[in-house]
Image (cartoon, rainbow, N blue to C red):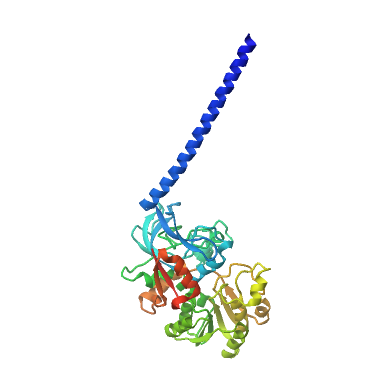
Length: 429
C-alpha cells in the first residue's frame, strides 16, 4: 500500500514539475516578446523625442550613409558634448571611404573636422562652459602626457588604449575608436585640451572650421619639411590640404612653389588662390623626370598631400592583388625621383597599409630626408586663428559646396569624383 502511494505521489510531483516548466517557458517567451516590443517602442520614442541623432556612418567601402544613432553622453568627468554647427569632408575620409574595412566596423560614425556649441560638460571640465563656440581638433590630447606637453599631440599616450598610436576622431580602432564629428552631436574627451574656443563671435564658421585639421596640417607640413627662403617646393595634390600647403610655403619665403595635380579645376584654384606655378599630371611614367628637369635638378622640398588614393598604375593594381598594400604609393615614388639630392620629402597624405615597392634605395642613395605622420595640430590652432583674424588669408575661399548633413552620401560621391568642380564640402547638421 505504501509503495502504491509513493508511486502516485511521484507521478503527481512529476506532473507538477512539468506544468511549472511549461508555465516558466510561457512566461519567458512572453517576457522576451514584451522586451522586444519595449525596445521597438523605446527606439521609436527616442527618434521622436530627439534622443537619437543623425550621423554619417561607414557601411562598407564606398558606402557612407546617414543613419540615426544614439546621442553621445558624458562618459568621463573630463568630457564635453558639442552640438555640431558645421563639419567637413576631408581627403582622409576618402581613404576610409575606399579602404576603411581594415580599421572600421559597419555603423561607425566618421568625420574629424567639426565645430559647434558646448551643450554639456563633465564635472572636472574647467575651461569650457555651456554655450562656448569651439573648433574641435582631429587630435585627441590629454594635455599632460609627454607628447601633449611637447607639441606632439597627435601621439597622445592617453587617448587610445593602444599606446602605439595616438587617439583621433573618426579614424577607427587603430586610433582609439572615437566616433567622429560628421553628426549632430559629438563627445569630446579631455575637452579642456581637445578644443579651441573661438574668441570672436562674429567670425563665420566657414573661416575657422578648418582649424580642426587641414589648416594646421598644411602649416605643420611646411614647417616640418623645413621650407625656407628661396627654396623650390613641389606640392603633390591641389586638394584642400595641398592648397593650404602651397599658401604656407609661399608665406615661408619659397622662391618657387609648383602645384601638381591631374585635375584641371584644382590647378586653376592653385593659380588663382595662391599665385603658384602649376603642373598638369598626365603621365605617371614620365612626370617625375619632367619635374626634375623643370626644377633644374630637383626640388628642395616635396610635400605629398595625396596619399594612397592617388593615380594608381596598372602594374601596381595587379601587384596589390598579391600584397598587403591597398591603394597606391605612386606619389612617394614620384617624390623620390623629383626631389633634389639631400632634399626633403614630407609625406602628409595618409597611407594606412603596408607598402610594396617603397623607394628606399632612392631615398638612401640620394641622401633624402623623409618625414611623415599625423600632424599635431592643437598647439597650432591659436596661431593660425590669429592669421585669419588679421586678414592674412581667407580659408573659406576653397569651399565649393555647402550641403545638409542629410545629403552626406551624395556629398561624398561628389567629393570623391571631383564632380561639379568640387574642392571642399562643408556639411551643415
